[in-house]
Amino acid sequence: MQDVDPGDPAHQHKQFGAAEQVVREYFTYWNEKSVTELEKRMTPDRKGITWEFDKPEHVKLLGVNEIGSSEENTGVFDILFDIKFKNGDGGGSGLGDGKLTWSYLLKSDGENSSRLIHDWGVGERG
Figure (cartoon, rainbow, N blue to C red):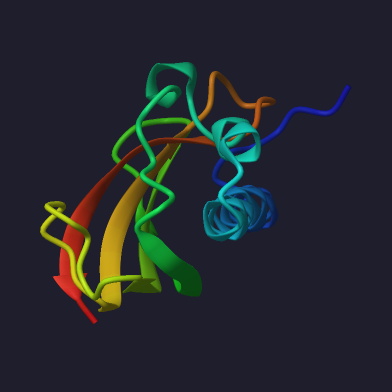
């Protein structure tokens, strides 16, 4: 078995690609309102949240940018997306229609496990 060097640019590119794919799939399933598929891309402690699928008309991923990592087996991404609500606002969520940039933290249990979405937070309006 060949050792993996986490500092190897080829290895880092592969991990970024896999993590980016998780984010892309997450937004696809958010737009499709599929809780089962969303939760497959999230760490266990994030499952069971209230999605309020009745409020957004659509959620469209516009961009994914890895901004770094503070710990081993983690990655932080700035995600640009467009959200449109049926009534023009998120109904108490504080969100309105438009482009948003949120940060997403992805974690894995180890070098050979997939990164999953562990946390996210509001960044800025796009």
